[in-house]
Image 1: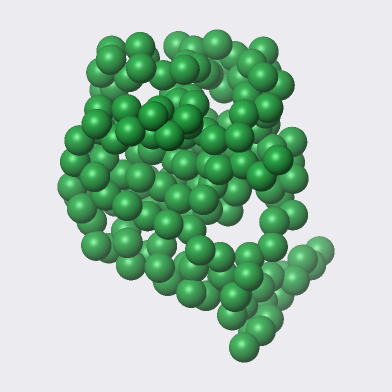
Image 2 (image 1 turned 120 degrees about the vertical axis):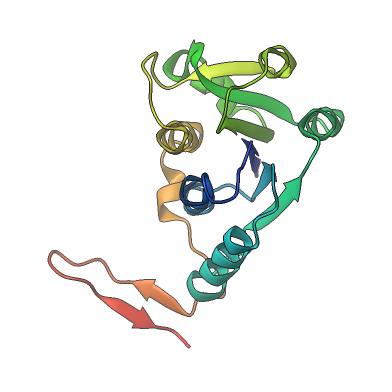
Length: 177
């Protein structure tokens, strides 16, 4: 079954969150998500970064900015997506991972600011990768890997202009076009 994976970044403040949000986009893209929805201030520099990565490295990873997180999450639920809130307070990913792997449409919710109680209640699953303070970027990476059993690590990106050739030492990047 082909999965539809969306990352939902709850909260983005221009200047303060640019780097972390950009890294959330890179991790989501590289590890198999189809797109990211960012609830917060529209940031054209993040949009440009994602477009540039898609252009050079291939793929069609999407990015969208929205204002009303509650409305968007409720709409996604209506479309039969399961909402998986990544939080250190949730059930351990190693205990619910097999159940989540069977789902076809998933929204992984990651925060940047204090998450409202309503998100915990709206989520179909509150999942943790550890019960210790950590980064939403790390949580997202571990979650996406567990969800796909590592298969995303071999993903090919169509339309790439460059690609890395693995090497024991140094960097080897080849131009494809």
